[in-house]
Image (cartoon, rainbow, N blue to C red; front, side, top):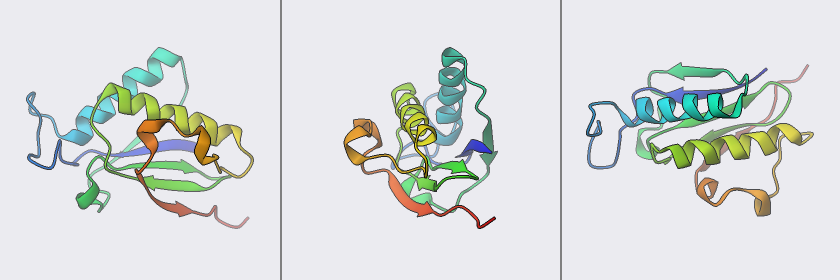
Length: 123
C-alpha cells in the first residue's frame, strides 16, 4: 500500500503555529496536497496524524510504501508548490523497484527535506 501521511498539527512557520487564515502549517499543506492530487487525477490516499514528533522540522510528511523504502521528511513550506514537489518525488519513488530515487532526479524543492529512510518490513 502506498500513501502519504501528513501531520495536522505542524507549525505554519518557525515564527508561528498558524497562518493568516488560522490553519496550522500541516492543515494548509494537507489542503494543497488534496488539491494537487485531485488536479492530477490520482487515487493516492492521504492519511493524517496529529503530531509526528518532528516539531523541529515542521510540516512533516511520511512517504509510505509497504513494498519499498518509506521516507520521513520535514521542513516543508505549506505551499502548493511544495505539495507538487512532494508528489513529483513520490511518483518517481513509485516507479523505482526499491523506492530509491537518484538524487539528480529529485525536484529542487525536495532537497534537504529527508530525515529518515525506513526499509520495508520483511515478508
